[in-house]
Image (tube, rainbow, N blue to C red; front, side, top):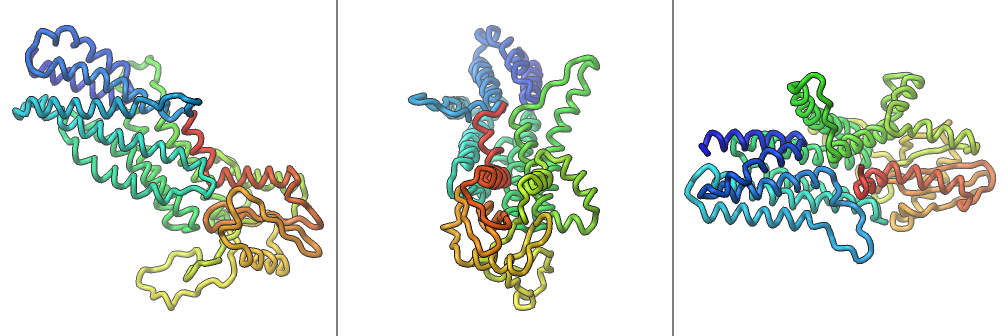
Amino acid sequence: MTSKEKDKVLETYFSNLSSFAFDKAKDAIEKEKEPSKVLTGIWHSMVLLLIQLACSEKLYCSLSFLSSKGFLRKESTLKTTYETLRDDFRRIDGLHNDGSFLSHLSGQLSHFCAARVDLLEFYDKLAGIASSKSGAKVEDLLPVISDICETNVSKFYHPILTQVKAVFSLETEALQKLLRAHLDIQKWQFYPSVIALQEAKVKLDEWNLMIQGRETRKLFFSKPQPICPNLQWLNRWKSTLVAKFSLYFYNVLLENSSVSEMRVLCGRHSIDYIYMIHSFQKKYEASCVALIYDLTEVRDFPGLGYRLPIWRKEEIDVLETNPLIFYYPEKPDISQLDILNSGLASKPSSSMSYDRIIPLSDNKNSYFFIRVDPKIVLVVIFHGRKSEKDNFVSSFMFDLSSQLRCTKIFSSLRGFK
């Protein structure tokens, strides 16, 4: 088999691998399994490893390795498989370190498998956020994915791996931007949130277009290849964040649109938080449903607007009361705001948890608090006496706060289909 013939086989293999056509990649390289036995050198060993790599990539992109594990069930072997592939590719490179094309390619594929091990561990941590009772610790994962992105992308640069590297970069950069957007939104930072969401959209659109572009080059009547689960999940996470952004910055967006336009816009999101809140308020006659930015233990919070970097800290007017992020159907009156502010001031962050509703009342109203994000609190106000044990109150507050924290989207990683 000539070098050109091997190059052609490998080009077809990696092209299929990077476009989610794992079975085609496997079938194409399996055809070389028997003929390669009679050849000397490392080609036969490479063929066997590439068959296994195609199977591993299919499992990786399906997210099946994150499925919930039953009692006494052994952990997924996918991580072990990639570690073995990494070591085998490295061994081939070491045994045949003659500067040949296949030796050079083996060394770079060992780095690719090592990067996959890092991503397997990262996705497992990401899925684990959903079960964290102390709230989503997204800030702990941002430096992890940033390191994966920056460290590994320069280690497999061979021209034949161009498409594989492109997909790897798009996936890791999309994860990085989505984590950044998640953090910026929960910190109620408008401008950084817009930038991070837009950058995430660019990466995901580029990835989608890369696949669609390859599909259009196929036969006109051929059936389109379905988008792989990991890309589907990333698109779903982005849609969830966009819906959350529209609620957190509803009043800002309303300044440049009408109420009817905002309802139409929010109705197109994967989760229509406005309809969800309106329906609850109307059905159970809540006096107000509000989201509040908790300024307790916060210093030098300048407000929502963008500040020029040249502004000095002492020139910024720091807010003295907890700002209302969102409220419906009308803004709480002064007496209610005083109760809300004093309630937040009297409850340390540790006591107002993500899985506990805090009740408060005065002579006229009942107030219920639950923490949504580290500094965002959901409040429901009723005229008269109400109990936090009422199912309609607790169910709504737990469900809304859980969805806003993206708990459901993270937990869906364990059983994504």
